[in-house]
Length: 288
Image (cartoon, rainbow, N blue to C red; front, side, top):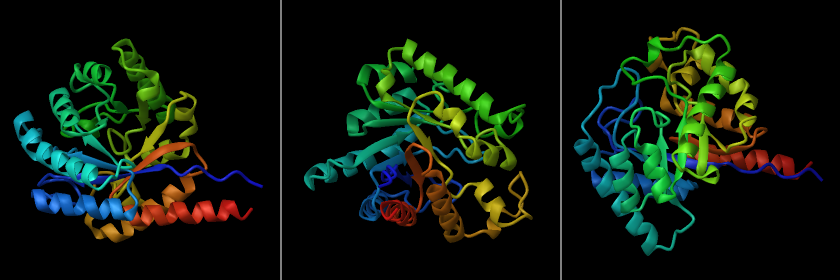
């Protein structure tokens, strides 16, 4: 009998921002954020990824104080509800590039640091992860949102991303982060055009060679929309022609296809669609 495909963790996106690319402003109040967290958990999320700063292309940085004001009340409230309802199977992640925000979020109840900059935006991030023992997601990154579209020069995108991720992992370990606490992320959409994103997804084996758990965050991104509409270019022109519902379905299909890889997790907006895709793949393999 064929061994069942291991189900990746589902990381549900909770953006408490006014300007995120697909859901900006939808969950910017405490009540709406908590309600959405409940929806994500009911849908099957294992992790709630709370972010207070948009990283969409062209997004401007915000102050750390503003980020803290957005995320800490939300994390504290969700954490209290998880504790009250006995949901120790669900963890909270903080999506931040700031070490001070990460530290405050961990104190508020988060267990995972999801740093899209891989520690490059704040040199103290690895120290915080080491001191707290938090799980650390290290993403591939070459620059902030205002400049990343100009930093996508690669000869071999999959191999170069793997090399640059290994360098960041080495830096984290040198700072005291335990190897067992590290997860890597290819950084889809960050300093990569549509073609490069697809080449990277197709060759995740280059990242597997590094020997660390892998998180993939493709949900609703521009290269997903580009696969559905050939008129969408690498700069997002025509990007709005593809609805979130279509992007969510395409993301779920990609998740199903990527289950041949050994993924630690997938970061998605539509948890139900992804959970359904995972269930179908597992049912198919169970019948072989």
